[in-house]
Length: 156
Image (cartoon, rainbow, N blue to C red):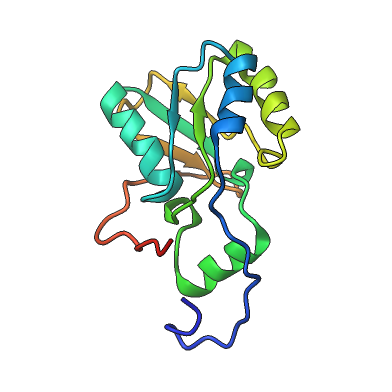
């Protein structure tokens, strides 16, 4: 993307794809009542959360600052005008876990080499069904829409 946009940036060549079977196995052992797993590859976290909210008829509320985004990715998104919540994330998963199993799930995921950045980013609520809201770092709230238009293609 850097050459295409004419940016003189040499990003770290860090692949974001990873096998998830070990992480999922650890998660399900620690949180056997996990409701749902989602893949945020196409449309990023925003698409995964909106798909669940819409199909399940629930609301989702997240803390934007709790979403683990590497500083280099945040900087690139800011420079290019992308919302980090809509950027594809291969090798990641979104898990919907009962609140009483959330800490065990996080502990299990963080113990896995590929899940060290696992974070609890939000909750499912009855209010505003079919909608995802994010609390911003400055305390406001914003609607997290389903990504519109052409999603960025993945070249794998």
